[in-house]
Length: 66
Image 1 (cartoon, one colour):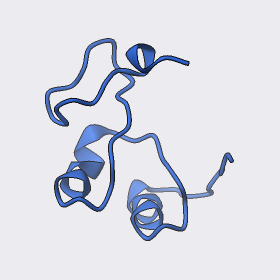
Image 2 (cartoon, helix red, strand yellow):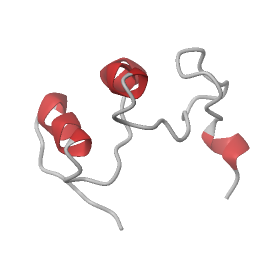
Image 3 (cartoon, one colour):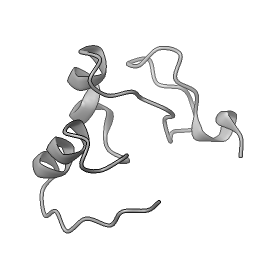
Image 4 (cartoon, one colour):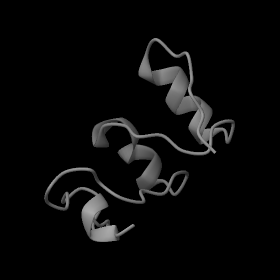
């Protein structure tokens, strides 16, 4: 499922993900890290060429495979 939201700023979109209204979101690490640390969201992959140090153990999109 792909959801296209009409959010003009990040905060309401992030709130909708945390509340379960939207199944996933690509966003900057700093935006969602407090929720990952609190266990309210799960980081699946990072989109950079190298794994990020902030969420340890989260692979890059390329390394995660098809």
